Length: 330
Ligand code: PHE
Image (cartoon, rainbow, N blue to C red; front, side, top):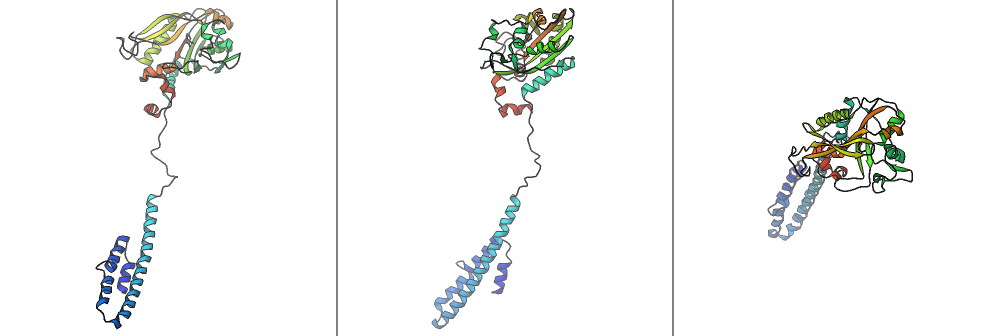
């Protein structure tokens, strides 16, 4: 009996303990077999034998159940130890964010113009009529001032529709020579595959005293810039119109997808329009009190550049914050 009890007490796990239990109380178990002796026993011996056996049975059962509790507790503790987490642990696998493709593109453009000695200027997002339109030679009746294009906050103020007002603000605040770019958000009442109500532009303005700056300087600067951005492309200057430049040109590059042979992206023209530019109109200089100066200006859409550089088909996807797109820029 003592031997069995000590075997129970020294069992190392629940399995071992259960084996002992079966060896005692199972169909062929020791105690079961003892009980089966009862039926062949003379009546006067039966009672004492049964009492004795029941006592042993109770004793063994309680030893088993005490050991069982003990082993279960150890099991639980081991399990908790194994599954515990240290919330203060440094997670090596934490993910790092990435710059948005529009910001990557903007940085690349800014970097180029900084290398060409341009300064960076800024202006307010909420503008007045004078800086956004009037001073840029956009008279009151000009269609670009239509309510359809412009967000007005009240009679006098609006969300700037382009970065060109920063040309005016920079000229008001300083004297030539000026050599600046202005990156920033602009706003228009527009929303479709190629337009969002907010997007980013980079403005450029170069002004010198006298007649030193000509269309040739504009052409040289933009050609080099576009080759820096897009590699070995052809650059084409197409006559156009902006109220604040004269002459005005829109600038195209040969399609970077089909190399100019014509595809869906370039609408089978072989060319992609990438920016607007021109020689600063004398009316603009007059508005800021500049005399006897010459200059050129340009403006580009950063999202358009980002889409071309990274083959992004839908402008709106740049504003959706979808990680499947953004994680590709890590
Ligand atoms: N402001 C013009 C636009 O938003 C772009 C531009 C800037 C054109 C400077 C010429 C010179 O379309």
